[in-house]
Amino acid sequence: MTEQITRQQAAGTAVIGAGIVGAAVARALARRGETVTILESNRPGHELASSKGDARIRVLAAYPDEEYLRLGLDSDRLWRELETETGRRMLHPTGAISYGSDAERLAGALAAHEVEHELMGREEAARRAPAVNLPEGIDLFLWQPDGAILAAEAGLEAMLGSAASHGARLIPGQTVKAVRQDGDEVTVQVAEGQSKFARAIVVAGAWTASLLGWPELSGLRPTAQTVSYFRRDGPPLPAVIDYDGAEPYSGWTPGFGLKTADHELGPAIEPGRLPGPDPERVAASTAWVAERFGMEEGPAMTETCVYTNTPDERFLIESKGSVTAVSACNGQGFQLSPAVGEMVARRMLRS
Ligand SMILES: Cc1cc2nc3c(=O)[nH]c(=O)nc-3n(C[C@H](O)[C@H](O)[C@H](O)COP(=O)(O)OP(=O)(O)OC[C@H]3O[C@@H](n4cnc5c(N)ncnc54)[C@H](O)[C@@H]3O)c2cc1C
Image 1 (cartoon, rainbow, N blue to C red):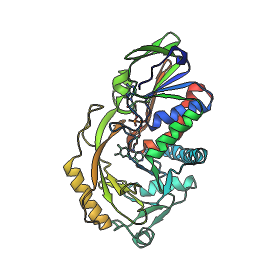
Image 2: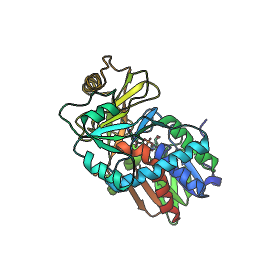
Image 3: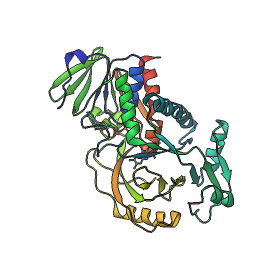
Image 4: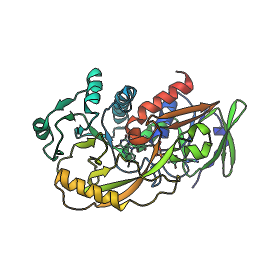
């Protein structure tokens, strides 16, 4: 049954959207004693949102720049803290092997921040990642032993569970129609009426720009990314990432064994209208999986998932009065969400 917003809740912060970023923002605010109401139009992790599925890659990297490596290091600590707090395992170490023109720059950033890594030639790389057929014509590889897979579904549940344990209230099935600054307060309108909050944080993924209609958000571009899942038993494969983006990237998944997706952006979409997987991308992933891992069978499942892209690949946090929009997606939004949540909470509460 859909719960309604009541006058009693009309204080503190409304967090609009219960994807991983909204959950992390809500948790960070609630941990600081803030009254938080999370409004979610559907259910957390639903099919049309970006935070669905069972796995995301967690590899410390400095793209687009070193600030993001620092976010990664903070997030790492916060994921581990969340594991301890909730007693759930979310980080599954697999190692990660990457290559391409950014490898040396990224290795330099990792070295500056004392993150364990090794730049190596083909022979050593083949020893470290024996299950991977290394691409021809490449002689330099970056190996990160602490590369891992984040159990995404468990991570979202744990983040929301922790937010709730600190007092945040989640109201699923509540679509926000409009968010408006009214004097010192913010009016949040839903189908059945409206409520006042001290502030609102819109973390609505692909829907953020259309909900607020701010010109500053007009650069946000939701795209449909094709994802393929392959059955693979045995020990988890390391994450494989080609920094030049010519090849798909892949990681282990608890459900199927192996998941691939593209760096290259898929077609632009209207939020909530997700086309089916692109057969050409599925065929390209199937051929790549055969070449890279010697796996001849086609995918056991394919789907599309939404990226919400910013023009410069940086996350976007934009405030007008007491309304803040947060778009922290692109391809690394899940792993960095805990640090983004803390950053937003510090800015909001000046703590
Ligand atoms: C194919 C693919 C692979 C990826 N791989 C990785 C990876 O390996 N590593 C990594 O770190 N990240 C990865 N990501 C990115 C990561 O999944 C996203 O950055 C992250 O899930 C974004 O979460 P979000 O909370 O911003 O958005 P969402 O999960 O989309 O959440 C937004 C929520 O807002 C709700 N909402 C929208 N409008 C309203 C409204 N009007 N009222 C109330 N609620 C509303 C929606 O229903 C939704 O639940 C990948 C993404 C894709 C698509």
